[in-house]
Image (tube, helix red, strand yellow):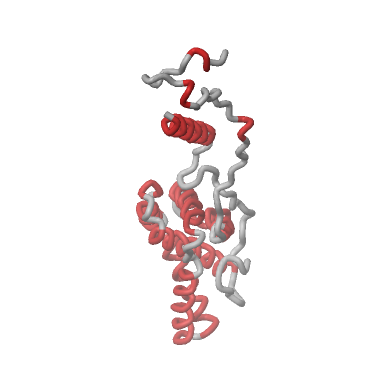
Length: 223
């Protein structure tokens, strides 16, 4: 009898806890979304990626777009654990929808390295730049927050008209970089047993129960 009552109380407590948080579960991977939002960023900002000394404004713009593409490419590879995120589908959609702008960014950044460092050395440095840019978005400890953020950015990028991917890169790349820092769910409600009203337990001593496990009248308390 006592074991059954304990199990019942435990089940009730779990049910109450579930009800307390069910109304807040509005995120895909978190109960409460971490806030990585940040101000827009320019291509010349060191946070974008590897520095490009002596770059023109057009080269910085290509640098910005190419770093966003690299981040979303990494997300497509690392975020497949959740089909709900549609990381691969979103990325492939961006490649198709913004193919011209992405090719222009690739060509512009490649020409920057050749202009500044010469054809042969420039190509080598551009290859290094591409590899390091991808590696700088790789994360394990911050994977969930990164995948959540990359998903929202990819959806925005898909909604942009052709030729305007740069606007998403400028507005959201700082946010994507911020999401590489580990984030954990926040629980604004603290457990306090005073706020959980449970029915009073009946007396548990054997003398209060008959052979049919019915509570004797003498042990009943007024409700």
